Every structure is written in structure tokens, then in C-alpha cells.
Length: 94
Image (cartoon, rainbow, N blue to C red; front, side, top):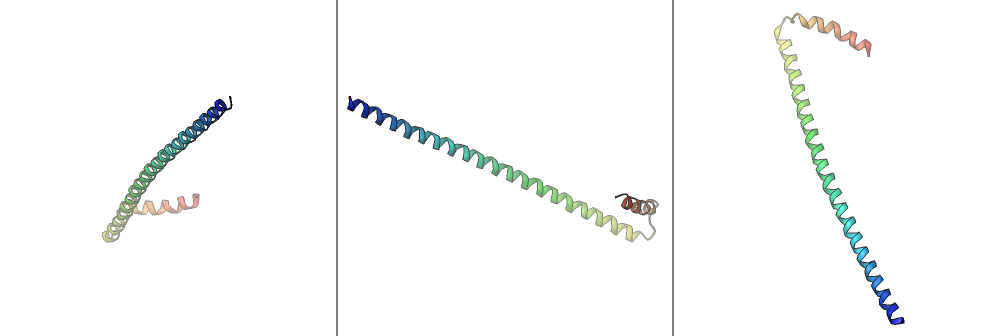
């Protein structure tokens, strides 16, 4: 009878070891999936930030080009004085 209990206890120990191994593999799998997902998200964020940086650079260049054109014209366009009068108003509103 003791022999049967010993076998049963040994069987339970094997199940416990297998359960621990299964849990370890499961957790490892989840961590790997999370790492892959975070890496993909990080790369996506970097791409979006690079695109935004490029757009800002293009916008700055466009603004500088417009400033250069306005300075070279000699006489301001009819809309230029209107804009310069509106800018202080918008500054006072904020």
C-alpha cells in the first residue's frame, strides 16, 4: 500500500513539474508576443514622428520662401497690410 502511495506522489510531482513547465512556456510566449507588439508600435511611432518632422521642415521652408518673396517685391501685396493689421488683434484675443 505504501508503494502505491509513493507512485501516486511521484505521479503528482511529475504533473506539477509539467504544469510548471507549461506555465513557463505560456508566460514566455506572452512576453515574446508583447515584445514584438511593442517593437512594432515603437517603429510605427518613429515613422510618424519622422513624417511630422519632414512636414514641419517643409512648412518652415515654405514660410521662409514666402518671407523672401515678400521682401523682394518692394511693394507689399494688397493682402499684406490687411494681414498685419489682423495679427495684433489675434494676439490680443489670446
